[in-house]
Image 1 (spheres, rainbow, N blue to C red):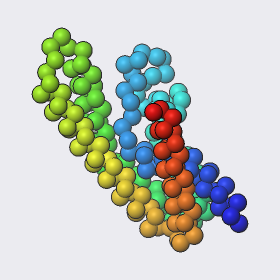
Image 2: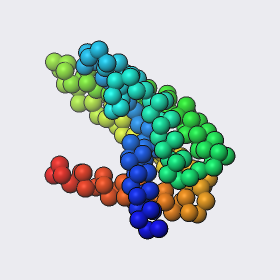
Image 3: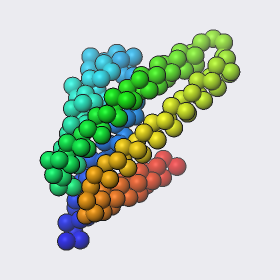
Image 4: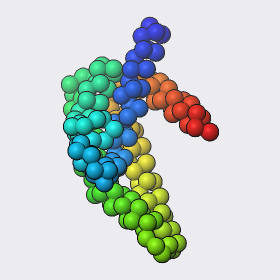
Amino acid sequence: MKNRIIVSALALAVVLGGGIFASAMAEPDLARLGGKHMRSGDCNFGGPGIDRGDRLEHKLEMMAAFLDLTDEQKAKVKGIVDAEMEKNNALREAMRADRQKLRDMLIEPEFDEAKVRELAARQADQRIDLMIARAKVKNRVLAELNEEQQEKARTIMEFMGQRRHMRGMKHH
């Protein structure tokens, strides 16, 4: 039983690592790299031709399988995630635009510290808003799970947190 939970936890960790909840993060502006598969929306850490919707759908399916969700739970979770994605589209677009503005400002001959600070502060606020949105989604999804499913999900989230911490330590 313990091995089954650990295996389930590891498997779901992979799914949540990229994360249903992290899917609210803005996608990078790959179009500026000029590759034929580098249009924003076509490629976002999933390889050419994989868009945000396809990845999200796959992650939801994996989560449903690992947590053994009922059809009703699947529908509720999908509704929660879809609603949050739709709600945060404008914020992700604003973040993308601000990142581009910052890149453009950094290559200008005259450095304007006040403008850079303003953009940096706005980006920080936007990141905070997305962090709060992800936390709300996570909380709402957990509320839809039974106790056993919640325990599995928490185990996986804990594992992923440790894994992220270990990856961060490699870079120091």
